[in-house]
Length: 348
Image 1 (cartoon, rainbow, N blue to C red):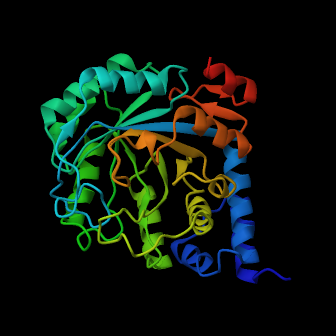
Image 2 (cartoon, rainbow, N blue to C red; image 1 turned 90 degrees about the horizontal axis):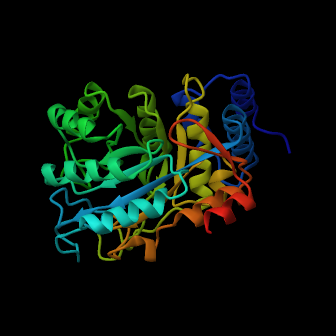
């Protein structure tokens, strides 16, 4: 079977170091996920990304430190004020430190996200940042995952120990949320101005999203010079308006992340590229970041997602090992060999 000529040309350019254009990415996503063309793109993305990173992956962790019925009221979120079953709750210092220690005890966590609601108590959050910076090893980066925030407050977060910010104008922003897309972009600019790195993703992806919508979000990574990106599927959270709207499968998600990889090849430093939920198909399609999670989670109705959807550090290492990665990168750029002996040693 002969490969589509244009796809072959785009793939050949990728191997030569040339990124796919927006229009080319839309074209690539027009093929079925099981087509020869989609497999060719997956192979190119995986081989190029692994060559540029010395076959290295990273582990990020996220702690949901507090929750409450959220005024952003996102249709896809378990915290949405109009549908949530959660009441206001907050982790105490002892629990937060215990969770940080669980993620960081072996020193190979690249970055730690601290997640709260769209509206949050700044003083509590600054306290949590300081707590994390005090207890996490120096080589683990601390990242925020908060709602829209001012430049001044981001400066305070940087002073408290944050080195970057996860923020994005999501798919359906302003339509399936009560948030202003421009306010989301302004928050990202506020963070950059405060000297914080930007981390993003294309999310939350549902079966209704078009290639054009997905590609528009992919290219925001270049606009904001993000150090981390990826593709995240929407979860049909029980009780939300999207509970019965269906999900894309991991195979489809892997096709999306492979095209995303080709879009970013002209960035001087290739961002770490995540796939969520984690799946081996994604790590064979260019993704190289996995996320371990604990505490509350917007894609889960459990009070602690580590007992439900969330992976722990051991499971994360094993997924990456089974996907063939040979190194883990720490937050300071140093690497450790990812072997079964290493994984077993971390559990002693």
